Image (cartoon, rainbow, N blue to C red):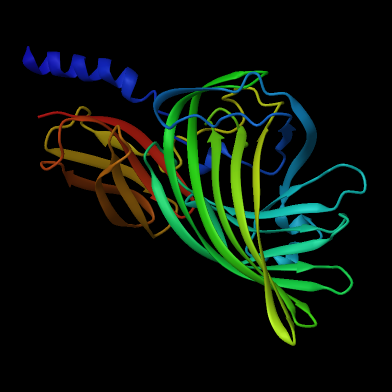
Length: 363
């Protein structure tokens, strides 16, 4: 009777535990998708992080709007400048020539750079060491860091080149509901990105500028929509312009910026992409609920190393194992004697995909 009661209680709790959204690569940005970003008249407060938060941006009023199409990177005119990218965001409006290049796979979303050839100040931004935007799976309390370098070339007369380096500290700091003017999303994660970078531009004739950038960005994502729902950014640039002409003179200034954008076309949908591609590895765990020993069965299309992990309701990794899988059917026995009772998400992950199963651990 106690055994049945424990299972019943844990299944009841799971309705709350698994209300926390999880985002994998398969939710986001495939060629053929499109999305819109709209700036706003008044920038709202980004609110707080935490569990079961309600972010209400229903009162924002859009101003300028830009649309983007998602394409295969190698089908765009600047693909050779970004050989590591596999997708591009393209402004499809007439005479536009703005392209953002990214690499997305089952493990991460990297930013590789952008080209704006049709603007009044044309430029190319290339992350020589790409900047990691997301690491999959994206779950509440997940966090990661990354260092990057970049080259920014202005195609002006005369041309200028900026060299820089920076770092980002990323954390998934909240989950809950997001209210936009046109729709409400009940399965949203908020990602906080704290960035620091330094760059230098040599302007010639004894003149150069050095920028120290401090950014805090919040991005809201949902497994029921394929693009970023909204973005809040606050940025502080400490700029020092140095003039060397006989004596050296420094001219410091501080530039501050606060902005907010959202996708006014976003609507919740679960049919865009299969959230986790169930069956990609035919993951099966038994028994479930599990006591001491857990049998993990899956198939692999090739010999490869795969990662098995269990994440608890806070997003903490409670178990991790690298599995040397062989082509075909695989069977692994896992001992869970050191893991507390509760609800977990089991992730089987490789370089090109992920499979997920929910389990209950009992004693």
